[in-house]
Length: 257
Length: 131
Image (cartoon, rainbow over all chains, first blue to last red; front, side):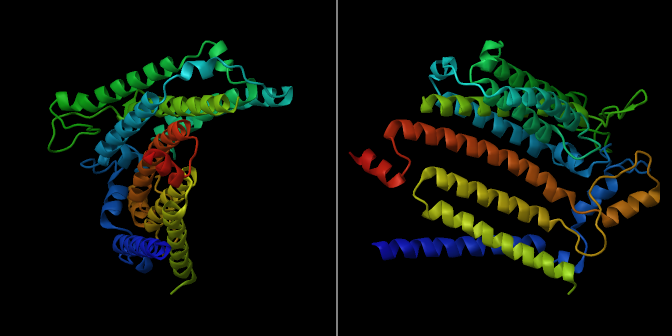
């Protein structure tokens, strides 16, 4: 019995090893060893901010963001929906949250609380910065949202579990904001479609009539649709992470008492 | 074979080994939480491998961000021929968020299982389910 189990584990391990190495080999094709990258990557790097040949450009010097929201935008939209569905599933699974939420938790010392106050502001500013500059610097909606969610977690740890509730925060507000932001994101996705373009079109393309989102707003460079999508994605991800962190903290502290 | 190529291949081999550790954890651990931890190790390692696949081993690679708002034609060409591949990085940020969603959902399920059966050992859970 034990031997057959060990054998099954061994075979599964070998299959996994074979799969992983073949995937790695197939994807690399040992192209890296000779130098150079795949043609698609080079195409995107060449065209993402090519102001001389705007046929395939994305209006953003940040190649990663232009892939996330322009060249492979549908991926990201569905990924957002997967995240949304997962968090909804978590909330449905968890019932009876209210009784834990009402329990009082201890708070930490004055030093920690003061440091948390300072860190809270810094974290918020940093996260807004990451999200709003996502189209010219590394970062974007996901990174900014993940950064943002740490701030309420720190508050919970330093000021006690019921602090946010006493200050008037409700989980339902986070739910409202994430749904509203997802709706706005969907509107940004659909506007080009209604104007004879295709879904998630950012800049004008030869085969679509949509004129493209404005790249400059007066003197300000805003990078087409990327800034709107980044901001709405930031709201969705931040609120979802906040919900997850708060619910986990409440469950954990509630179980212990 | 230059030293950088050697290091690149060596790093890939190490990462594959760590990924195997993750697979082993998922298969062999009895505790559900440890299984979830192994799953996150596996996911993060595979993401790192994916980023590695976009690296340019030869020359001095640049990050995939054009540092000018009014580049000249030549600057764009140099950027395209020297920057690392941005596609794996874009896919990995998607994968990270999906990883988080899956992990959060699994952890919620684990909490529910613990409330129901009072244990996280899957053998004892199976015993209690049979009764």
